[in-house]
Length: 353
Image (cartoon, rainbow, N blue to C red):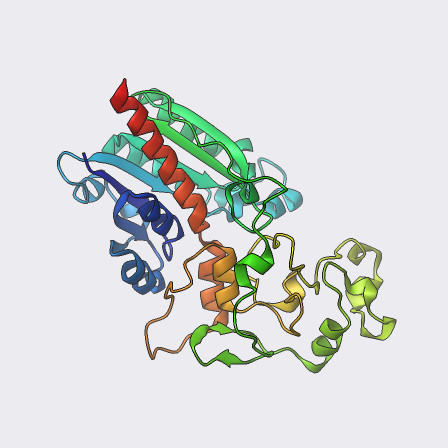
């Protein structure tokens, strides 16, 4: 029996790509950002629907599935209202967070679960979502609709993803107990920066690789070129001479931000890829030995996208910040593959019982 998936909040297709790689068949993705349409459809051979989740109906989703398929509804609602930074600067029940239109999108996901009644549900987000009322409500929707639920916070390197990232994963099934697969890696064999991007052609600050338009990097200012040349892999701005240090680093509040303007280390994992990974000054996004920040392709590879994943239509101009946002917001592809394999493992065990 065919296992078919609809991906909500699909973006450029990180989750979809991983689910497809596991052997599931993703039929469609829904997202409000139409700039994601080309990379989503071109790379994944699935239909992209530009539609606000609040306007998506159960019937819209049901039409995507074949009649006798095992139906999976997956998605990662925008995580900004639940991020660590959001909790740091706002109280737990802060009105500002709950008035953010993105806060309630998980409940729209829950509404669609009720309307579609898929066989399996997959939800991914940031760890702090577990501490919110909106998650409690989503969890109750699943329970009230007869789902068995497994959820946990996972450390991405434990599943072969080369970055310091933690994610909240939930799986729910109508018939039987579904479980996330056990970790596949440990500190002895974590995938490193060198293994991930070490074989790419060298490029200089502001250059574009002639064989891959995505292998390009933002141009550094003269002062930042001086700074990165004084930076050691794994070090900090404290390695610089005082005349190169930023004014913010001279204040007490700036003393703790030791990773900004930092270089990565070849034989360790990378930092979390945010939407700002192409900017040298926003984290430890300096290349281990070349005097520049990460290229778009390097960020995509650290997010475990295939090296031939196309984010831009041929001959169409684009801004680095826009593609970096799409890459940074994506679910790591390999995490999607882990989710897909967990679903397959559950279905195989169920079929034998």
